[in-house]
Image (cartoon, rainbow, N blue to C red; front, side, top):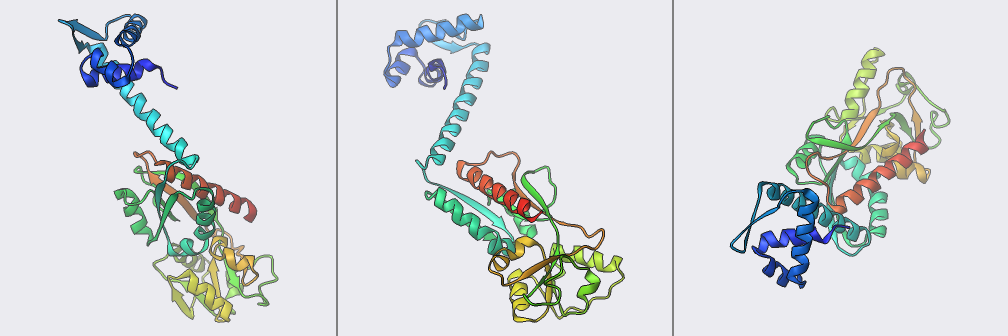
Length: 302
């Protein structure tokens, strides 16, 4: 994809002479010299000063060399990504996300990714939202996935969806057959609420306050897994979004009923990475898989 002159010029500067560059590249010195002369003719100015058979870069040559080395680095990065896609090399990617998403959304995505790219190691770590932000900022993780992640200049958003909140009930529950429900209708049943530290709880509390509803939950927890289990056991009803109950809805163990309360905000789920650092080949592939998976689920939920 790149002219030989780029490699020739880089080697001449690195080795200090055309002769040594030719030995390293296993080509004739005259071939390298001709390529450099042709480039100088094209640019209309010399790249090297030739003093007593020694070569020294001119100011123009310094500019050209910087461009050449940048181009060669980009080409090497492209080759590594191509090889990763072809499965030629192994790689690794670290994703930090919430415990709820690690248990509901990510298993199927990681399984599909590993089926397609068996040479790539996937590290999945569940953390609170604040620690997800810190891990991506520090570079400890390639990708961060979470609800209500802050919009920061240090991050680039790779995927984003807004997810509606609904009531989660057991099959056969009085609300299970309804196309939608209101928060006020849910008060007739024991409520299993997210703990105050969770972003979804802030959304629910604001909605309860606007409707002037006093809430007395029977359980508060940071575990969406526990919420789902308690609903299945008949303890009460919970409030989650469709991603939180993917597996249970698929096998008919739980029913998700959308809330139709006016002005009830959605949960914004974002996939982020550090803005200034290009993703590795493995991380870019995983970001594509997560983004495509979320887009498909979002289209199916509409």
